[in-house]
Length: 303
Ligand SMILES: *[C@@H]1O[C@H](CO)[C@@H](O)[C@H](O)[C@H]1NC(C)=O
Image (tube, rainbow, N blue to C red):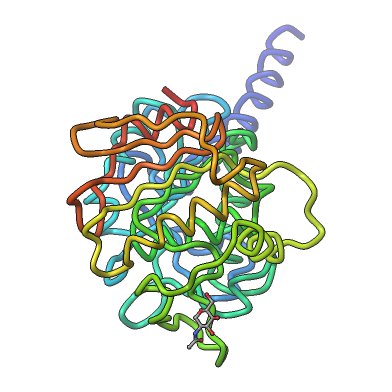
């Protein structure tokens, strides 16, 4: 009887252990892996993921979005997030743009709308898949990116505010600024890139809110970096982005809480609006501002 019970118990354990290992075998830890089927992928965006070797319970998620001409692999190699994932128990998602020239679509109506079927929709579905597969903590999902990936970070925060707790933007433009009148997918908007699209905080806030009109919850905390010598996405885009998030997050654009010179490093100026908004203007730095991984971890509340 006892032997039978033991056999029965170990069979149950084998079953449980078996199903757990099927799940963990799906994506190998410790290297960049493609995930083929992450659910609905309306824009055909390839998904790559870095699962840390040291994965613990309820991991956080950091979506790291590459620049124009980049790929998931290039951003994985050129950014600190995979190493940080080992240190801070998060899974890094690296979407890879499907477009020739591999900028992100931040111009079409589809991508600028919640569940609109564009690139942003596919990226949001990568997050949902990862939350589900790994029992990740839905309160600890973050988004960051450089250049085109920074523009997409603003779009993700505006169109999918319910998914993200915080975002960090390295040299982007406001959400909606790259809008294409002709409906171009992955279009280039010269007047925005050249810093000629300027509006009030309210108008920028409305542009962001219009991407998810029914939404009444909190928006992610945003940290915005921009270089004063950016010749690709001209510096006025810094001010316009700050106006947008100041309005969305309920701050008075004209009255920041503090302005800190030479912070976080010589030549950088940090403008603090409050716990949910900071801008960092990098004097003399071009396109793009170097990633500050440890500061990102602090902004995300992971460090
Ligand atoms: C560029 O974007 C702005 C909004 O930021 C829009 O008003 C303008 O029409 C766009 N330009 C083109 C050529 O679509």
